[in-house]
Length: 80
Image 1 (cartoon, rainbow, N blue to C red):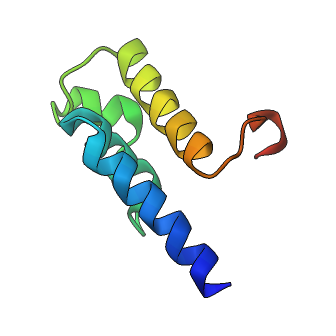
Image 2: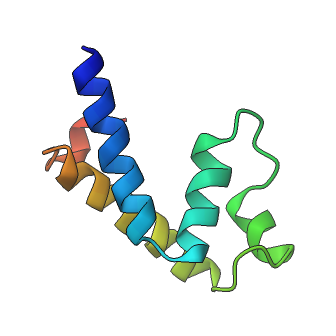
């Protein structure tokens, strides 16, 4: 169990290392903060990320897809 959790953390860390600054900001704010301060729109409005709304969602989705591939989860319709 602990090895599985460590593996999951390593996959996520590797994906974050390879992500750009905007993607990292999105993921850390929306998924890792205990008390989320911003929504995606708030990140854009407050110039914490420098991409359009559409591109921000694409960056988020690409990151999630890379994590899923790293964890051998290919059918994301089963993940909520």
